[in-house]
Structures are given as structure tokens and as C-alpha cells.
Image (cartoon, rainbow, N blue to C red; front, top):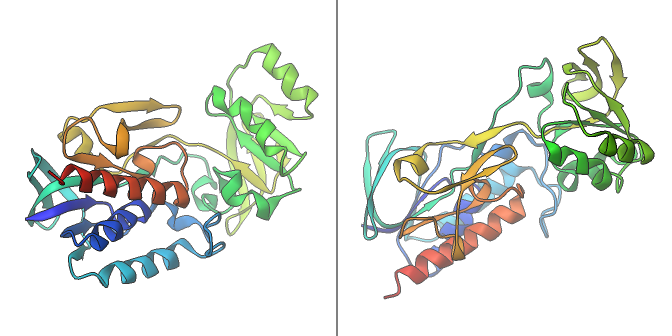
Length: 296
């Protein structure tokens, strides 16, 4: 019987594993090796590791976690999960069943790429979602923002910290005239047509083509595609969920507790702030929540 089974061994899951290991708890981490930020060349805003490739960070973290004898890392996903506190059962894709007292769900989300030529090839390089993560490298250049929800209307105000050359591609959506006037007064260029394709050089955006034939030179395109949890274990467990502008996430309370006792969640599954630092933070809190719940 494991003290905690962690499903998802990227940044949130490994942070939780290390914290629990240092409390000498028995932990199993299940992971498919498909971290969401594997497309990015480097990770930023990580104290002491700014600019390090995500894969290198994870490799170092796995090595450090393996130092602790109470932790086992298993390279497999979870297929089935059931049970209750002190008697959870997780069945892996390989057919192995693992018993545990508590669960931490940190299996992340999957971005649903639109069927636009060039989009997937540039994702994580110059088709990006976070200016804090990637904006410095393309500061002062030509930025585009692909409209996905009313939240997109706030993007140009934030992006002005990095560039004054911003084009908002409305992708066929209508916006209020008041919002259009505000954007135009800020110098934001508006394009109404749908995005039809991205011209790039090995993932480096050169221009975009719209459905009306317009071609716009760009160096970076910000986009927020729909996403979904990378597994359905939350549904198997009947957990409460929360809608977001781009998908759904697990609803949590204090110390990352999910809506059922003994279950905690961390990482991109629980926050719209998608970054390594936020993942680490939620993983640490989930570990503390799980540990405290066993101290009876």
C-alpha cells in the first residue's frame, strides 16, 4: 500500500513527489512522458534555471526524486481509478494495479490544435500562449493575437509591455464597437477575416494568410486553443469541474483538495495560469494537503 499515488509526473507531480519523499512517505508516480511544454525550446521565469529546456529540467528532477528510496517512478499512464481514502486502486495501461491511501492528479491538459496549416508546426516556438514565458525573445517585433474569447480583447493592453506592433485577428468573430474603438485608439490593427494559414521557416512565423486572401507579416502569433484534460480519471472519480474560456479544469478547495475526500489535484488541471512555476507551487500544496490529511 502506497501512501500517495501521483498520476502525472511532470513539474507538478514531481514537485509533490519530492516533498512527500522528504517526509518519508511511500509514493508511486505514474507518467507517460508527454509533458505539455515539450514543444518549447526553453523554459523561463524559473529562478536559477531561466532558459533551460523543459526536458532537461524534468530529467534532472527525475534523477533527484529517484534518490529517495520511498519513491518509485513508473513510465505508464493510468487507465482506471476507483476507491476511497485509504483504499484507492489505480490500474495502469500495462494492467498493473496499485493501491494507495491518497491520490494526487497532475496529468495535465492537451492542447487541441486547430486545423490551420502551420499552426501545429509553430506551436511552442513562435505560435505561443504566454508573453511572460516567450515575449522577451520577440520583444519589439510584429505580434499577432488570434481571437478565441472575449478575454482576447484584454491581450493587447498586456502585450504593449513588449511591442507596439500588434494585430488582432478576429477570426470571423464580432466584437462590440466600443471595444473596437478602444483597440484602434491604442494603435491595435484589427483584421476581421478567419485565419487560413501560417507561413513559417522551421517553426519561425514569417506571415499569416487570412480567409479573404490578406497576408500579414508577423514574427509571433499568440493563440489560446481549446484544451482538455489528458485523461478521463476525474470523470471516473466523479469530481466537480470548473469551466474556463478554453476548456475545463478540476475544481479545488484548500490545499488543492478536490471535491472528493482523499483526492488532490495540481498543475494545469487546476489553474489557468499555465507555467512551470505555478505547476511547482500547486504540486507542493497538493503534497502538503495529502500529507496533512493522513496525519490523524
